Every structure is written in structure tokens, then in C-alpha cells.
Length: 312
Image (cartoon, rainbow, N blue to C red; front, side, top):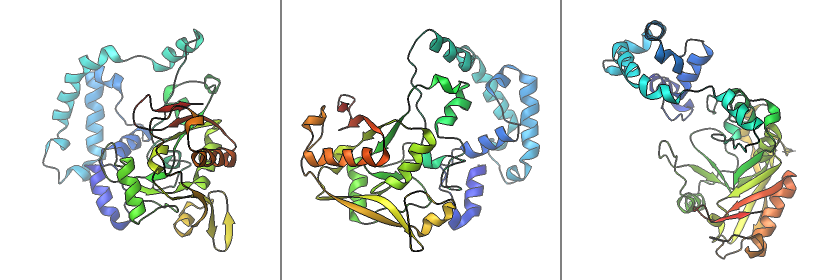
């Protein structure tokens, strides 16, 4: 409800949020009035927190006539699900530390993209959390030495959901082709994703701020039918050539992409499981990306199925 009202008030400057309440939840966390899982096991404390929330957000509730503004209903719902959640509540930090100490392998998977990070992304067109490696440390309560390797996951082209600057965006029929072939629709909202050529300027920043050592390139097969493939290698801004994201993110609206063109491979890569089985032009494309980013290649996805993966 709160996000819907705020996004409407922003008008044309809307962020393009999913309207699922993620932003207001993070705001409560920073305001130190958020509801935590352990509060569900302390009814008196939970009731007081809900009453406080009602006072803080009174302006939003004035015109709310449904159950979203009924703290009694919210309280009853939370108390009802508390017994279901209680057996699942653990100290994640302690659990992971124990597994790490015993020699077990741990895979941390980040959500969303590096350029949506609240601190380092294309602010204000970002999410409400840290989507970079640092978010794993603070979100899970682990130390930096528990991370032995960082693998960056990148599509063979670029996508973005919602509003915000996107220098390499394709707004023509080719962009639509990438969207349809790649099934580029938001996993939460179903909204069509914006598509464009691979943006190495944004990727350089993503690799730097995450300490990426290797990359996993996904959806290579989506490019199979293209005769020509372009890669954004720099931005042209006010007569200058930039190979890094400008300090003022707002300048990205005026950044003109500088492309390098590659010959397509015009043959199917779907289901290929070895680099040697890829067309030579596809290998050249991958080599250019890794060389430009100074990273290794870890995986290449050649289809939506788990087995359609090249392990390098």
C-alpha cells in the first residue's frame, strides 16, 4: 500500500518498484522499528511494535479501508503463523560458521544485479538492499575470509527491469527479439524486461566492486540467430570517452554507447557442453568479454536446462 501511494506520487519520476513492500520493509529496518521473526514469539512485544507502526504510518492508513490497515488482523495473522515458522528459526551466522569449520562447501547466491545496489548502483533507480558481495557478509553474518571465490553471473546481453538509465538499450525490433527469445519477463511481476547489447562499462564496475574472479555467461544461445552482435565498450559523454561509470549516475541518461561489432555465429549453440563444440565466432565473443574484464570463464549456459551448461 505504502509503495503504491509513493510510486503514484513520483509520477514520471517513478522508480519502477515491484510494489511488493520491499522498500518500506527496509525503511522500517533502518528506522529501527521493523518486525523481526523473534517478535512473533513475543506477542506483547509484537503488539507494541504494530501499534507503533500504526502511529508512524497514520497518514497512509487514513484512506485505507481494507485489512491492510487493520493491526488486529495483522497481529492475528502473525500469531497464527508463528508456530509454523518457529521450527525453522535458527542463528544463520552460527550455522554457516559451523559448516565452514567442518570443511563443507557453501554456495552464496546474490539476488538482483550489481547495478541495483542501494549504495553502488544507479541510484535512485535501485533496490533497497546491498546486492553486491558485501550484502552476503552483513545479511548472513559471515566474515570476509569465508568467501574463497567470487563468480559473477552475466547474460550474453544486458537486461533491466523498471525505469532508470540504460545506455545500451535496444528499443527496436531487435530488442523485442531478444526479449521474446530470452523469455525476458520479470520473475516477480511478469513485466517485460528492457533489453540491450552487452555493456562492458557497467560490467567493469560490477566486477570491481564485487571482486569478481571468474564469470558465468548465461543465455549465449539467445544470440544464435543474429548476423551481427555489438558490445558496448565505452560511453561518449560531453565529448569525452568513458570506460568507467561516471561518478554522477544521473549523467548516464546522456551517455552515448560506443560499440564494437562482432560477426554472429548463425548456428545453434543450444545444449553444447564443451567450449570446443562452440562456433569459432562464439568463442571469440566469450574471449573478448573475459579479456576485456580481466577475469576467467567459469560457466557458459547454452539453454534453460541444468545439463545445458559448459563447465570450464
